[in-house]
Image (cartoon, rainbow, N blue to C red; front, side, top):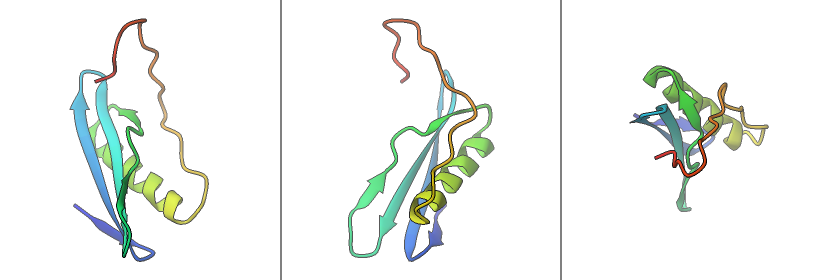
Length: 82
């Protein structure tokens, strides 16, 4: 799925991990390279992660503060998120 906002293409992605659903957004502006947000946070559902990626990308394009995910993971020393 992709959306259009302010002349840019927003592509939200959700990846299921052992920690939950990870949100990622790709923003592609006309005439420039596409940029990936990197991991935006982890969510209890795919739908919540998808919606957060869209909200984050729209805020970024509108030059507003980006939202923070509702949950932050605390990792055990030596543990990796992926």
